Length: 120
Image (tube, rainbow, N blue to C red; front, side, top):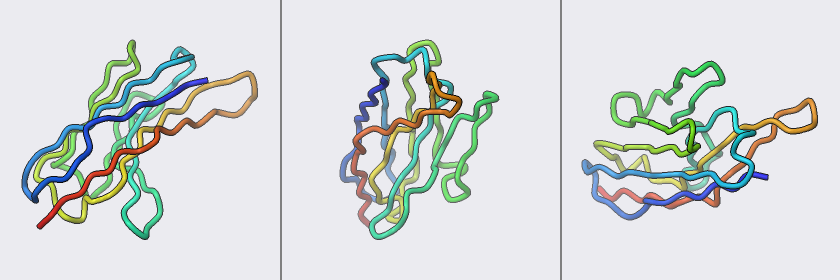
């Protein structure tokens, strides 16, 4: 089992920066890649910045040039630096990890989520 713990959310004004962090614990050697997702109010969860299983990074179009994901692959920690925040970035942000198990299928883990609210 893997547990994910996010930190760093809060209430900010538009234009400022905010950093989110996620730390994995438990069977972290089973993790293959990690990323950040968010769920805006009344909408579905969507990917924000995700490490791919080939080592690349995919960013949502709406955050390109403003958000930066980084990580420590050995420690299985990731960080999301969010610059130039906009009110539409308001959402619950979730840390995600995809790992292996004894089954043929990957296992998906989620953190509990951290609220980010951006006021105009």
